[in-house]
Length: 305
View: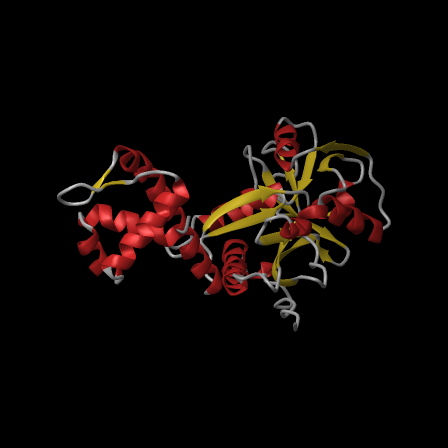
């Protein structure tokens, strides 16, 4: 059975006769009749009633017709998808990023997508494995370290790490906090899988400072929730929640920050589209967080192939 003969079957059904259908599909009437008989042999069905008068679908033909329509529609969809891929167009884009980045950066950016942009979906991944998702279906990955050399990437933004305190805390009138002030405080942080925690660890080590009481949480949101109850200082990078007051955390060499990078496969058929979306995400981050978020370098250019 060939798709071509299924299309001929549908053409005859729509046109009402083999003669009329032959003009539509640009095949001679005898040739069209032979191919329809071959289709019947392939299927083991009598699709048409061949008596006096116009050619009519048999009962078996009428029952088979919806299946033929589905097969032809699926083939047309597959061909359209192949044409879009060959042209570098993307109907969908899968974005992988850490959970906080998805909530505070990616989701607000998705609200700015245009009608002609690909339909997005997202995956939450921990930073240490996020680039690996590009080998398992993701189109664009956002991480907190430069992507490996096997990928191409773009520096997106440098985002501050905040110390969050309740609105009744004695620090509520301050805008920034030297990291040495954290010594002796009960700290509410994420574990070392997450880059804000690693950035804090590195800043403390550079300043030769040691932690006091530390509590780890699976999500930054829960750390903030506990801080809102007055049980400690949340040190995370996500946007403020629960009415908390943010203080920019400052180490000995400047603000404690995390970097966001976008990465994708250079051989992806939609690499041009992905790069364009990553560039718009970069500008979105700068608009959202200010010029201080602008990366010092524009990112690594694509690898040569």
